[in-house]
Image 1 (cartoon, rainbow, N blue to C red):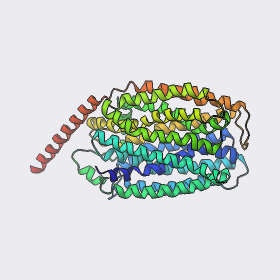
Image 2: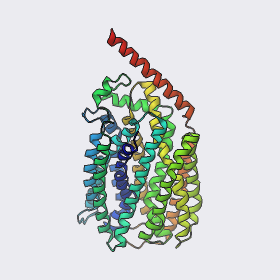
Image 3: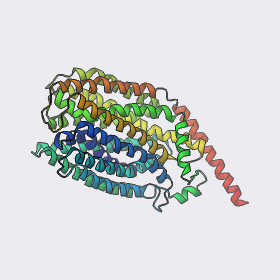
Length: 466
């Protein structure tokens, strides 16, 4: 497969991740410290909006599996979702003046509800299309490696833009609003690029139905049957549970990271982004080729396990012991953290491999259903994480509408950011170690799948000849 096709497809991840980064890192402080919403109400709004987002993911996967556009099952949603999400992101970070807590709560809930809906429209078909672009496991590693590469470019964009505006003298409100406008425009551009780069790679539904290698059941009751079969997949369950636990840790980590650096280490907002978070992303990006190599050399399971496990150990040990006022010690943590976090690409790639096993058993090609359920489960955990975090932050003394916080807040944040987050990473890696999908097993699955396709094709040819 040509690199320009893979890169063009993966480029949409840059815009998607930029939006997610701004929401995960800046939305909490923006609505609590700038807009003046209570942390508990912020958490409640996140819970409701993200739970809807989670429910909509497998539905969107089911719909995209069965869409009848002549351009393919997935690509039109990438175009539409990118446009709507770009517009929604701007208004999320540009609220009008709202005086009461209930008005602020309703505005955040409504806009984040819409943003998450638009995110589902683009993200689920996009990731499902990535699993369909190739049948080869190593090429899938390349595809998801490119996705992670562009995701990190998006992470950089979402991180740096607000900090650059603050460094240029803009206040927090204007910096977030201007950044959201640029991110929205970027998202629309890369969505169009991804749409045209994958022309001819997204097979229309009618061709899937005529393809003897695949079965596509169209009744809506098939959605519930599909969900049950996904949960029965013996390879998918441990992978999903491990990723859920790790996602809870990532939600806490990304949401309170900026607060930890400002309140516990007493570092400046814009300097934290440039001196710590930016190097973290850089180390993550440069680690991608190494993780792809390790997966090729040793299989995907054990590199993914050690990456997640060591990330947890590092988080538990280092973050409670970083000295206040220092940028050098957090930079060391960013080096190791970015390197270990790069292993995340192997989780998505493993889902695509597990879909092969599902196809062998069911005869259906259901990337959309699997990746929809994958994203649903992680978003449920994010919703719960945000809700818990909102009430926790209020309980440990985080005050809305105040730029100056109680000194005790920093120590309490250290416990959350270090041992609690790290413990969840370690727990997730231990659950993941129970995954039984080895490279040898996957090779046997693909061999059997190829033989099954040949038999089905020959059978159909015999019927046609008769």
